[in-house]
Image 1 (cartoon, rainbow, N blue to C red):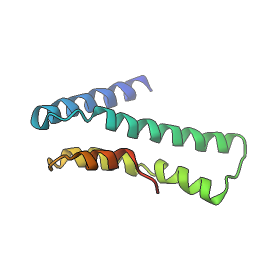
Image 2: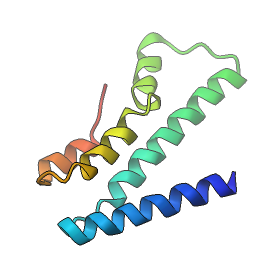
Image 3: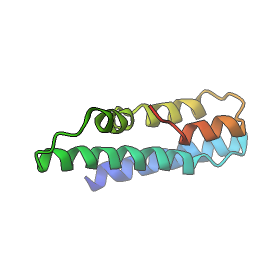
Length: 98
């Protein structure tokens, strides 16, 4: 598990450095938030499973909209496309609500 974390950490930091050189945008906090939200949603699903809890439909969809990994993939791809980076676009990366 440590090896996987270190590989992910190193890769993301290298990408952040490359993007910072090109666009002077500090995007690491946005990606960090996306990964934290993803891990929290996975943890919530594990708690439901472990406690044999069946969540309500709305609660399940709210958590599922994060756990489907769209936030992480979209955040990565947004910065890797080398498009113009605006403040509203950055805000939309952290404000995803199914």
